[in-house]
Image 1 (cartoon, rainbow over the protein chains, first blue to last red):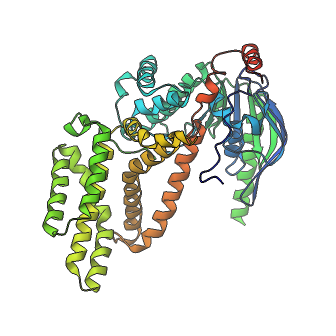
Image 2 (image 1 turned 60 degrees about the vertical axis):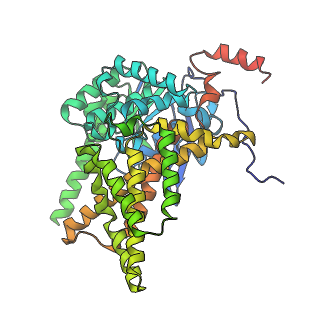
Length: 258
Length: 224
């Protein structure tokens, strides 16, 4: 009889191949959260460098991107990430997929900039002293040296979001997933962040409501009520989406007039 | 939720994290052995002086007392109803002293220092095959997020005042519970997104910057 929980078997071997292309293959993937069906019958594969995700509120965008780093797992269909079935890949995914949350306040765990960056390095196995010095060097590389000791709570929204992105990038992921990263940024911070993102070597999947943010992207996915409504070149998908929003608005105004 | 930290270079920041935690633990045990209300009042005063020694930023932290007003009032009323006002005063002094002292340690200690100080306590876990990192992280998060809970309560009070004109109400206890659960959800998700409490060290030895072929051959070498 054991008086403590059994030790989980530590899998020392890696099942993911960070260089896999496509890095994500969805086949009939569906997801239910609570009693709500969030995603239904998604079939697509992702290999492009810059992929955008659009859709109205509640269309399943956030849940969709959460599948990519194992924060959610599909309950129907099959999903393969970096060449491995998602269930097997899940424990390892945070190593290859950096996830940037919409609200930096929900992402930052540590009080100061340097600790937040260093945390990713300790997660990868570095000790405290090493991760601290590497975090400082990484911040200096990105021009954030002066803010190393600063409390994150006292930074501007733009700086907070950038710190959150750096905290993920320091782990050198292959894919960067961003869930509406520019929502609370002013025009200047927004454009600066966009420029920096486009210059990154990582593959990117990004949700945004501002369609301008997808300039320079290779592909855009349009989700509607948990299904893939359209998938293709940004100019085509964005135009169709814009047209759909216009139609909805016209209908809404008509309904209000009656 | 981003934990609060005072970026100063004070005496309190220079005291080792482990020492501060031991003093905090000892004083909370001792405070419950104290029988004289004057000693309890002295302890409260000492904590106030500690904040004052940090200067203006330290004194600003005493805004916490506002958030604790409601709890203090409930304690006093219950004891008054039972005919033991002095017991109530005693309980309030203890509560305020301990919350302020815990907050003092929290805002003057870096979280990674705190984690490093708490880690060794759980080393025996390793002897029975469990990870010591998990409970250490748990304890650190609790200590760090106490001031955050008080911040959440402050925000709720503000929202309540904006719509009712009253400063506080027992009705806020429910929403405070819900908001704290939401906060812990966010922290849990943020932690999971970066590899969870166990970390990713077990994968980095093999994955890292190496290519597939190299890893496959390594795996073969490991007999997998």
